Image 1: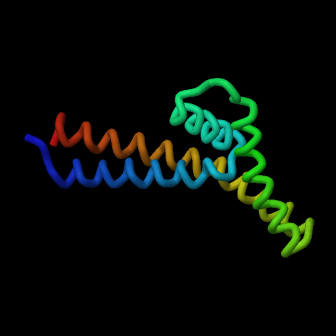
Image 2: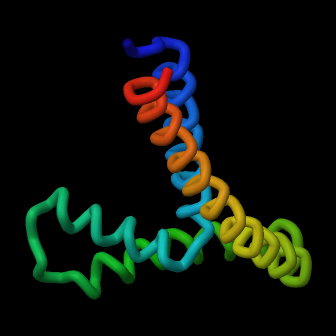
Length: 112
């Protein structure tokens, strides 16, 4: 018999993992490329793939330029470098949360 608490806990863990990975993809180079691929998939066109990737990168660089204008180049480099570094660990944590959530859901159906 399924245990609804295990299913709910697993669903929450999966949701948290997806949200963590979504946050991390904003600051990760691979996430930027995936965002460009999703935009092309939504439009259904593969023409202009390089232009779409350029637009996504330009959006990210515009944020960095705006921060540099406000705070200065050194603090901006440290801020965005730290976000890139932290995004790697958050991505791994998100994957772990997803795996644990799926394991909790499987446990609800198989063992509990």
